[in-house]
Structures are given as C-alpha cells and as structure tokens.
Length: 152
Image (cartoon, rainbow, N blue to C red; front, top):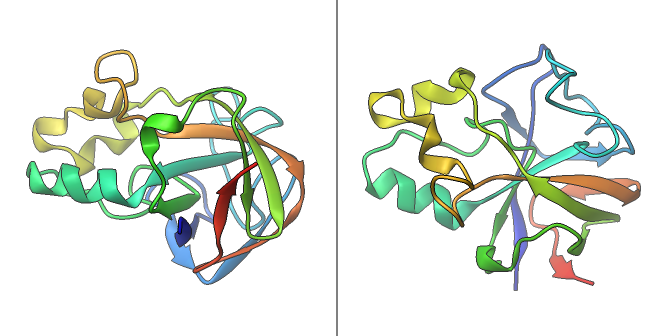
C-alpha cells in the first residue's frame, strides 16, 4: 500500500528540504515550509510538491546524489505507480486531500543533486515520468511519516 516515506520542509526556504515527522498541509503551503521564490513555488496551485521514493532510488543507481527532500519535494511517497501521476488526480494523504495540478519545472538550485549538474534529468518535457508534481489542497490536514496514500 502506498505511504508517506518522508515529510520535508525548509523553514528558511530553498533546498534541501529536511525531514520532519509531521506537517500540516494547508491551502497555500505545507506548514513550516518557506519558499524563497513565490513566482515559481507555493501558492494555491503549487501548495505541495510530491516525489517518488522509488524514482529517487533509481536516480541514485544512475549515480545521482538525490536524497528525499534534496530536490524540494514536501512529501516523498513510496509504493505508488508514478506513471499514474497526472493533472487532476486526487490523492488522500494522511488527513489531507490534494489534487495534482502539474509537473514541476526543475531549476539550477537542485543541480547539486545530479551528475554534472544535469537537473533536467527530472524534467517532464525531456524525461517524461521522472518529474516531481505540484498539488493544490482540497482538504487541509496533518500528514505524518508512514501515513497511507490513496487515489480517490
């Protein structure tokens, strides 16, 4: 069954986002997480950033130095078929309900996690299926490490 492997926040903004046991998912952001660039991060349509633990593990096998939170995701999910991720998908994550709004666009601030700084490795345009995804919040709630994740 899919579950939350990591909840990640950055109280000072930017990356990496660091693991925490729990965080409240709110309509405009994950509580305790700050975004330094509100033009490209945060807000109603990008309140939560999601990524797959399995993709992180596969990227590490390629030689990249990713860790949960190193590319800026708030929630690292284990056990979900990432090929199902698409705009409009609704997930129950812990107490919250979120709606996937679209793939993220990677930027140079996460280049430290990639071989030769090639952060485009997780670009949905260049490498479909490897992107992180943004989500809006339909129902606020607490999300904890180990919580179940289900598609609604």
